[in-house]
Image (cartoon, rainbow, N blue to C red; front, side, top):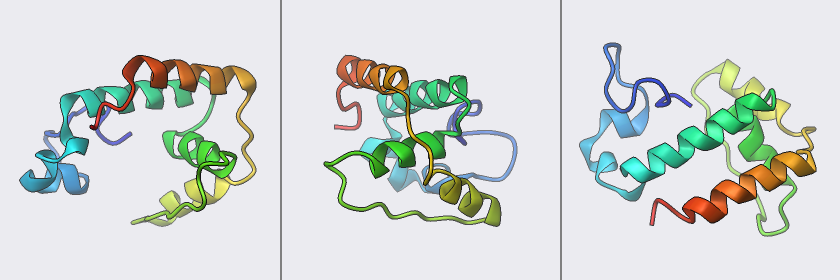
Length: 110
């Protein structure tokens, strides 16, 4: 969610690889469509009392198509957020809302 309010440019120090490296912004994850999709998923997570990280990891943990997850953290708070996702079970309503966004936007990073 670090690009939700500020986009890729903001007044403070750069946040993350997309903000730090122009070469990353030129890749599929830096597309405006991909960032807009991420904002929608992030907002959905927050509407359900979750952080974007918790919703994404909880989705992956319970999805038969995902064999494993790899987390990368740069702070203790991020590690706590990732660990807190393990027991989260997403409601059928939330899973339906995730699917609705996915069907509408397909894969905006392609």
